[in-house]
Length: 233
Image: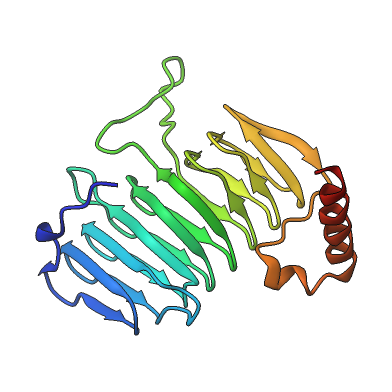
């Protein structure tokens, strides 16, 4: 991710609120009024907390609860034109590496749950402003936004894209290079492809070996796997 730090740390407008906790390296650029950036202090386990926020518009919010680890997150609430009344909310203990969140539509929301893991080079996007998309026959405006929601304990693989109006339920895995364009309401699935669809059901995602120790059944199965593997070598 190419980031030019010299364009950040600018605040042009009225009633903009900016706050950050310990260990957070926040770089921001705001043009507009009544915006808020609020980032809590990073987890004691994390090492990199580099966050870049660009806002052009009014009444927008970027709220990040206590992150586990964030290395180069870019949040853009702008696209050559002002974007208003949007929210980006990331719940606690989420990890990210080189993630872009592009909010290109008024009144839209990206909401990410707790304890999620984002691999490298993920893009999350809402809307197409300043461009407009209509149905030729009816004239209906098609670029409508709802909440783009990612649930709790979701793992998103490298180079994936999550597009407007998509949603991912809790405890799911998104395969590398996937393009998610719709709502997935089932839990404990592997979702992959372009466009993404469910490839496997009944899957449990465990974040690391510390978490694995909380699940004796899976822990014993993993130890057996390692033992069987050693016998083959």
